[in-house]
Amino acid sequence: MPSSLYRAGQWHIHSGIQELEGGVARYHHIAESRNARISTEITGYTVSALLELFERTSMTTYYDAAVRAGDLLVKAWDSRCSAMPFEWSDDGELPEYHSYFFDNGIIARGLLRLWSASHQQDYLDVAVQCGESMRRDFVNERDIHPILALPGKAPLARDARWSRSSDCYQLKAALAWRDLYEVTGDSRFETEFERALARALRTHSAFFDHEPQRQRIMDRLHAYGYFLEAILAVADRPEVRQALEEGIEREATHLRAIRDEFERSDVNGQLLRVRLWADAQGAVPLNQEQAAEEAAWAAAYQMETDDPRLDGGFNFGRRNGVLSNYSNPVSTAFCLQALSLWEDYQQGVPLADRRTLI
Image (cartoon, rainbow, N blue to C red; front, side, top):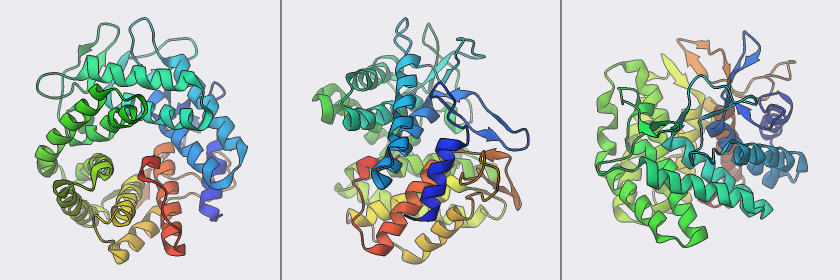
């Protein structure tokens, strides 16, 4: 087992980023030595990451932690308004009560993976409920509402931030519809995925035109990586292969242009995963030199310290040479999977199915 994988796994289990109730904090403030609030989206990502660790190591502690996270997501579903809140607290007190389209998709995919491993019906039921909420509450005639205010489900006003817009990155969340269709046979899920795919393919090339500030391009690279990850699901289509080839080049060029000023560790992990799976599917040949660079850049963010709250986790990023104040579960999940896939590729091991994408 690569030491980076083992140490990242131990961070997930022993750092306290997963709290006693099973939920996972959005990130850990390093200087203040405290967690941010529990995020249902990040808990969904962590379900997938823990199952990735379990499948690679057979260590049941990872499976048990994934079950605790899945159980928290089942508990978090608000049956009163049929919605998944974007945060959770034990006492129910939240500063904002919203539901995000993107979060629902990530949660549904994590729960589907856990259902496949456990065959526990609650996980499938909540995954379907999330998918139905995405279709029923967020889809409109023009696009997808990114955020709804609960309990009334009124759309929040959009602004220039990518996370408060409806753009190509939402396609990764829409993957949940495709996955749900494969499990349930409900063609309405497939129809909504195809609509989201068509919209994303029409608009993705202009995604960076909406950001005039140079350093914020890095945050958009993170979001654009979601789009590239999502189209791996249909990489057998000629128009998708072209978008993958163009998109990988666009992502790599922007990354190399601005990483000395601001770099996110997860962007390296995302791009490396897309490269490896696109090559494995025969869609885009691997640029081994650039892949090796991205693997090294991602690995450099894994923290090494005597502090168990930090050791093995990945730092969020670096701005003008200074590391961030955040130990980040999504950065850790993306980078541990990317580096594991890179190790598989180098060892000649066939890559796992792209459906295991965290």
